[in-house]
Image (cartoon, rainbow, N blue to C red; front, top):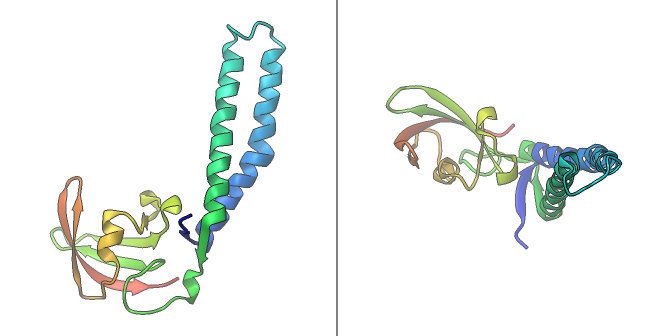
Length: 157
């Protein structure tokens, strides 16, 4: 089995989601199924079919979370240091065309969230940044075309 690198924050978020799905969502869905069954004929009972579909999706996600947590390699970013970009680094970049500044943290795939400034180590930008230092230029191929950035800061927090 492949290990899954995660920050401590990302690991905690997965554990919280698993706990919520097992302790809150699962009983709520079971109750919805029982209530829908009480309405009679199951073959034409939309509420029953909807609840069963919710149950299937929830149980599938629980299995996925259990697998991720079991394969997790938790990396404490606060104990990392150095001048080169590696897993866990928070990198400040300046777009060489627009001078716009972007800040990204390199994280594991399950915790990546572009809107929150966290990109996967396996993403095009994550791959391009690994091993770079302050002052280095990096070219990233994106769906909207190639982008060039300059690394202006690397920190671990």
